[in-house]
Amino acid sequence: MENTRTLKDKIFLILKGLGMGAANKVPGVSGGVVAFVAGFYEEFIYSLKKVNGKAFKLLINKRYKSFYNYINGRFLSLLFLGMVVSYFSISKVLDYLIQHYELYVWSVFFGMIIGSIYYINKDFKEWNYKTYTSLAIGILLGVSISFFNPAKENDNLWFVFFCGIISVSGMTLPGFSGSFILILLGNYVLLLVDSVNALSDTFYDIVSGNFSFIHNAKRLRLLQVLTVFTLGSVTGLVTFSHILSYILKHHKNITLSAIIGFIIGSLGVVWPWKHTIYKLNSDGSPILDSTGTKVVLNYERYIPDLNSETYYAIAFAILGIVIVLALEYYGHKTKKNK
Image (tube, rainbow, N blue to C red; front, side, top):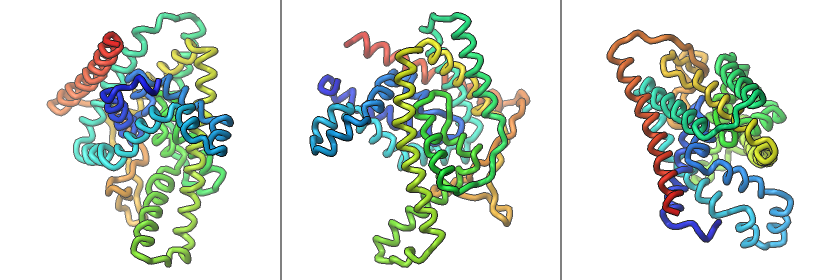
C-alpha cells in the first residue's frame, strides 16, 4: 500500500487532509464526510485501528520503521499534514468567508452534503427492514442533535476528557460534527478558544524569556484542561477506529445505512437560512476566538423569502453538489486508470 503511492497520490492525499481539516473546523460539518466521498474512509479507519498494542510494542523496542509501516504511516502522516496545514491556512480563509459571506458558505456546504448523500446512496443496494431501521435511527439522531440547546461550560477534567473523545467523532463518523457537539456540551469556547489561546500565549512567553505564567493559576489550569482534552481526543480517535472497523467488518450494510441517516440528519445543522447566536461577554460584546472570529453559540433557523439573495444561495448550493460530483468523477477515473 505504501510503495504504490505516486507523487500525484501523495499530493492529493494532502489536499484531502486539507479538506478534512477545513470541514472539521466548521460547526455542523463533518470531516468524515470528506473521507467518505473522497474514497479513503475505510483505509483511514483501518490505519487508525493499527495503532494498538503491537504498534506500541514496536515503538518501545525502537523498531521505528516497522512501526511506521505497520500503522500505514505514510498515509496517516500525509493526511494529518494536510489537516495541520489547513488549520493555519484554509480554515482561516473559511473563518473569514463565514464571517462576511455566511449564507453562501453554508449554502455550499448544504449542497455538498446533498451531493454526498447521493454519492453514498447510489451504490448502496442492500435495502431491507434492518437497513431502513438503521437509516431512520441515523436521521432521527442527526436531526435531534441539531435542535439541542447548549449546556453550560464545565471544566471538570473527566468531562473535558469525555469532550476530547467526542470532539474527534466528526473525523470517524460521517455526518457527526465534533465541533458542533462541543457547542452543545458547552465547552467549545473553553476547549477551542480559551485553552488554545493560553497555549499560544505560553509559547510566546517562553520564546520571549518570560516565565511568569508559572504563577498564573488560570493559565496553568487552561493548559491542564488542554492537555486532558488532547489525551481524550487521541483516545477517542483510536477507540472509535477500532469500534468502527469491527462494525464495518461484521455489520457493514447496517453501518453504511446509519451513516447515510446521520448525513441526512446533519442537513438540519447546515441549513443555510439561520440567524447565528454568538457567545457574548458580560458587556454584551461577542467573544472572539484566536483568529478574531465570533464564537458561535447556536442557530435560529427560518424559511427564506424568495429574493435575489435566496437565488444566489441556491446557486451556491448547486455549486456544492457539483463539487462533490466532480470529486466522484475524479475518484472513479483514477480507479479506472489504475
